[in-house]
Amino acid sequence: MTNNHTRRAAAALHTAAGAPARTARQAVRGIPAGPRTSRWWRRVVAAGAGGMLAAGMMVAAAAGPAAAGTAPMLAFTPSPSAYGQVTVGQTASQTFTLANSGGMASRALTVTLPGPAGFTITADTCTGTSLGPGKSCTVTVRFAPAAAGTATAALTAASDKTVLATDSLSGTGVLPGHLYWTDFIAGTVTEANLDGSNPQVIVSGQTSPSEMAVDGSHIYWSDLDAGTIVEANLDGTGVQTLVSGQEANGVAVDGSHLYWASANVGTIMEANLDGTGAQTLISGQWYPGEVAVDSSHIYWATGNGTIMEANLDGAGAQTLVSGQSEPSGLAVDGSHLYWADQNGSANGGTIMEANLDGTAVTTLVSGQTTPDGVAVGSGHLYWADEFAGTIMEANLDGSNPRTLASGLINPVGVAVSSQ
Image (tube, rainbow, N blue to C red; front, side, top):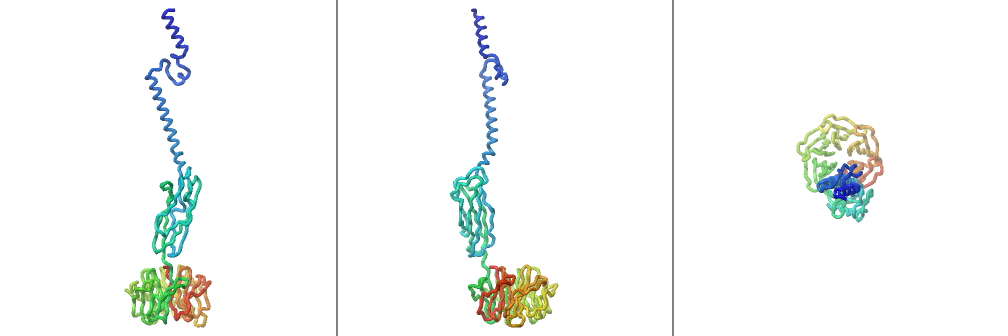
């Protein structure tokens, strides 16, 4: 066999082995027949690597949101949370639910409550728990203010020092309300808790203290025989005369002014809270007595059995209620007027109510001896029974009347504060 024959046989054998010809796989992929040079192979490898990289990126992109969805997602409800106003010395509690809406369980949780001592965790099913997807636990927090003012705290759930959920808490401590009354003969002003407990004389040495009023920082009373309007702090300190030269009877206060009745002169008077700028609002009244005020009107009782009303500047005076016997104490809230009617007979005294326009006059309480000053607040009515020597209380509808203080000499004026 010649060399040419040998080469041809080798070529045929090589072709039969499939080396130079395109295979079916090569044809499908578009790979040229012939020997795989290093340059050609590098191109193939590079193309393949690019495809693998693109595929990897697609996988990573697809896996990103799914991976995020598997993380624990914790939140407290309700959030944020306000406890509102809580009386100092009392408590309010709320229960918070911590829920996991994510796709993975948390690690063991630790719940803390950084902030003032007024907030305290009293129950906790979360600490030490690994909270799974769709699971929840609870934490109860008590707010017990020790002083007046607003306090805030942050309820926090963490795992491995990583904070997973927080809730902002707030509450306001308010001082408890108090009841005040004057004693006309004893010359004193007394303070007590709203249930009548712990009565204390906070002002003494007055000539003949009569009707009372109170605002957020001071108590006021008329001293009938001294002809003065007097002021003191809520604890009885800082007593000072604001207005003199008046035969002042009933007294009332709003955010900017004092109001009183000058009985013998027949006028309704006004002054600034410091007693300056005294002026006559209404004249020609028949022995006006007790006075009350709300955000838009002033009200007063007269000696001829009427309850009157006028605008705060004295305009538009009109009769709301007539036919009463001896209307004395007078109070007003957001929907009703209240007054005492002594009726001039033994145990014939009543506590009365009417709408603010004078309609629907109703007897709430009867059988009182000589009811006088009336106050309304904290969901109750309060009044003095002058000759019985008592301070009385009833629900706003007149039900459940009861004695809060007894054995007094001559209680006349009553006021109730919200702090």
